[in-house]
Length: 296
Length: 324
Image (cartoon, each protein chain N blue to C red):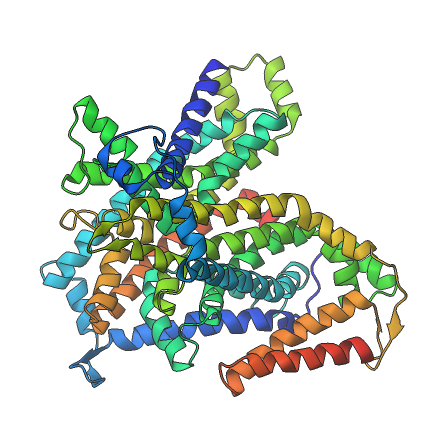
């Protein structure tokens, strides 16, 4: 049965449309406006055309070099985080207890980090990994491995990746758990009759069925890790030096720290376009012919 | 089987350790935190918690944060419910593009919006109020709520709409009496996600308020005299609690609550000035949707001081309940 066509449904959408329009389009126009202008201060602006964009996308300029360095760090961070969290999340979802109080407790514990404010996640990991008062930092140092995230590049990245894994693996695990629950028992019975190995059950039954939830999970994790700001800002502040200055940290530094509106505007637009492009690719992959019918 | 236990056990252990450490630190004195590495507090103290509950700047920070989070959750749900219904039930001009556009706002980095939001909300005079944060968080919460609710609503067969219409139910009456109890769990899940994303967000809050929110007050533990680690840890522990409460609340009560409202005192529909039969639930629905429009119109035409708009909504609500 096809949905009826009814343009009056727009009235039901209107409040949502208006509030998102207000919050998305006006700020976006402000950003576009900044990105094509230059200022001498005193609110005097003049037209700069695509000057900021040329500078931004030219790796040899100061701004461009900075931009590509942060972009590289953000991309590397997202790649590491996805490579660690997706397999771990699937493994955790597969090892969940089947039922009862153990299951309920597991679900609550796994969901818990998702509800902690991001600055508190940062604070918590700062307190946990400091080499003087932190359990983790102190223990690693006590074993004999020097570990101080305020001056070691490797330690800083380790802390951030561990923190993000701690924070967000639960999301993948919960999504996969929901996906696994929806596989009918008949599939497993058929596999048992055929004498399929555990690995065959995983690759032939569970993984294909998890495909759509995994894509949502990967999409959400990519967006959030690529936009990460608060946690690294609280823990490392972008340091030591600028080795953990991700794109959003750099952007806020330029926009709110130095008040370089033109540069920040151009950077914002390129940043948003990158995320939109990647998400669009994911979205198109998600709506492939095989599950197109379900979505439409 | 053993491999499973090990994976799960190790995962849960690393999950709990940082939280355990935060709680331990919050119960220690600063002298002990800096002085020695102890797994459990040697001189147990609740001084840090007492400081937070006795100083207005601290506990007001929590109240401030909770008030914009609750406000945002309500606004998001009230405007997402009709929109999600429209998306799940009708085709209309530009529906698919609109849906993707709404979702794409979930992808915009908050860092991009920090500065323009500051300008925008300063310009309309809402800067440094809970309204600014609550409205700004709608940017990502409204699309998310529509997305989740649309999923739940599409799971309800459209035959139910048809049957209700043939039985003489008006759209609002059907929506509140039959439809909302059916998607109660969806409403609970959306409320949970709206609460969660508004509660955990920091960057926009910090940009739009003058250090009144708890996340900003927590930075005050760092002073020239050094950091008050115990106090910082205690403040952190207390921010975990609302989230845990919300998990509990959503799981046990929201779904039941809606079922209870629907069962509470069955009443006969009456025909008011609009000429359509309505029940109490319909009038509530009409009131909510109308109030959303009144507030939007007020923001657009008059200004950011919504006090009078709320008064107007109250009058409107009374009128709807008396006359419709």
